[in-house]
Each structure stands twice: as C-alpha cells, then as structure tokens.
Image (cartoon, rainbow, N blue to C red; front, side, top):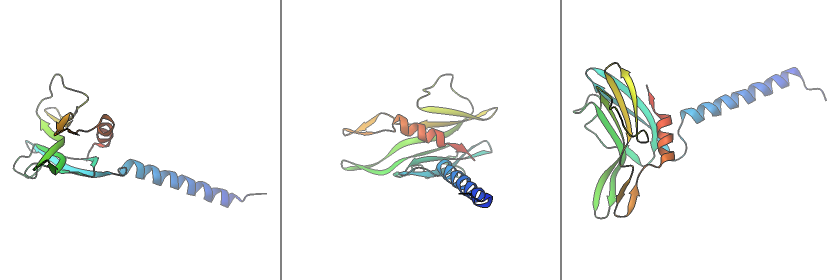
Length: 155
C-alpha cells in the first residue's frame, strides 16, 4: 500500500506538534497538587520578580513584605492559618530574600543563592525542614524541594 507524501507529512507535523505542546506544558505548568507562585523582592532600588511551583495548600505568609510593601527585601510562603491542636498558626516553608553578601558556608540542601548583580544576592531557602508540631511533621521532603528548586525562575 502506497502512502501519499501529503499524508506522511501531515502525520509528522501532527506528531511533532503534539510533542512540542506536551513538552511545553510539562515545562511550563506544575504537576497535579502544585501551583505557580509569583513574587517580588527589592533592595536599594533593584526589584527582582520571580516564580516557582509550590504545593496547592501553600499561600503567601507575609502580606506586608515584598516589592512596594513595608518590608521589601523578603517574602515567605507556606501553610497559612494551619489549625494545630487548639491554635491557628502559619508554618513557613519557603523564604526568598535579598542580601548584599553571600555567606561563606551554608547548607546546600536547604538554600540556593543567585547573584543578581555585583553586590546583591537572592537567597531561595526551604525553612522548617524538620519541624514537628504535636507529633506531626511539617516539612518539605527532599524530592519536593528538588521540584521547587528546579521550577524557580527569575522573571
């Protein structure tokens, strides 16, 4: 059976289009149970916009922090208004901050630093990695942290 060149070409275009579409979607959109977080921190007139993937249950914990707010150089994300026993608490999971220097040593399993310019560094950190409250662990697993780190982008 002879296949026409048109049909073969059309099939190749459809297959390549599907590969590109699903590849773009896989890179651009978070997996199930995750969502996109956007934020901005600033220091000395330099604003840095960023985005990363976080768990669906996370939210912005620092309403008065970030670009154009009272405290511009830091934002944190995590479990907002989490009921623990008889109390309602926020549990920090991720923090983003700007600093004028980078420490000589740090825990590479919990923090990454990105040079913004010669005298400004962005710190992207998982926090409370080992928190246990009333016998329940509230931590980001290593695989979750890898996913969050790999999704982090400066816009």
